[in-house]
Length: 140
Image (tube, rainbow, N blue to C red; front, side, top):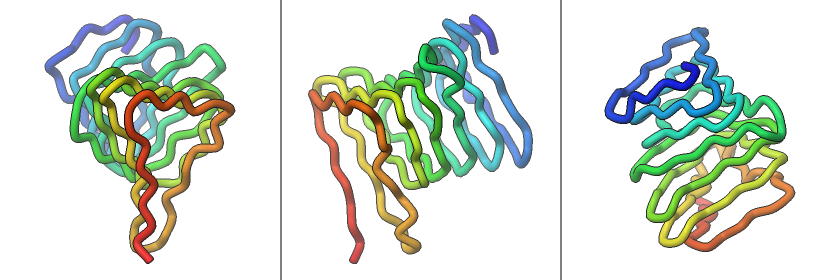
């Protein structure tokens, strides 16, 4: 999906499938059920949902989320940027290994959800810019 402008579309990725996104891609939402999303450049999603994995492939890669209500329990890894636009919300419940930057916009919310296996992790980002709300849950 390079330069794709599918603002209203939902892309569904099933077991072992992969999708590569390129600079300027915009997708309404992604439902990742065991697949792999490779983000190179700037990719904007309405929401990210499912259990697969997202790989930020390089320091210049940016996963930008501008919608509300996404719940992703897969893994996000790599050295790029995860950005929640102003007013966006996303819940991450997987093992996250983002080493770049986390940017939470004004009135945006990022929740790191703790599941029954206590597998959710706060990304080890170099910088967390929190202009909204960051919630870390612990179900114990």
